[in-house]
Length: 164
Image (tube, rainbow, N blue to C red; front, side, top):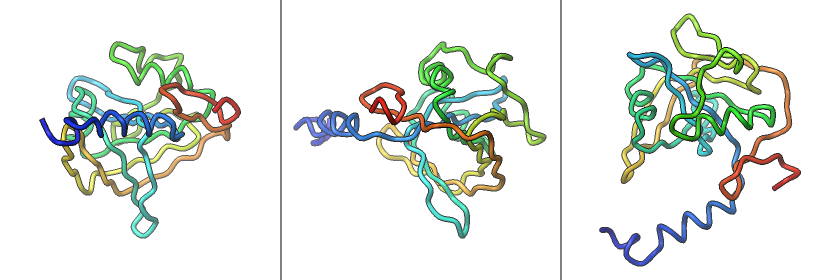
């Protein structure tokens, strides 16, 4: 056990970040047994020259497949996607159903065409940090969808900016 866990800093940090609102994304990729995806609230723009983004994942099945993929799609979500974000945030949630509006890119990744934006990216750096992995990726394609109000993750819930 590390010192951060022993003195409660890790739990206190989780509590602090629960009070910090973040945007919501679903990250998808093509796996050997079909599409995989997960909800992430850690997506950030890294830079525009080269165009790059970052996010972190824990060691779930979907995360392991995404970390091994040559590319993936980061979908930035709006409030119309609150239910979808919930499904992708939990094990056993409905994923890639026809009524969710998924399509497939020529490169094989699932894409949600009505996402506020979808960024196809290729991993540049994978940095292990404890039981998580920080991913830095180069953005190779950007697709803009219909505008929407922001979907925010705050206090372990998906909310609109008016509810936070």
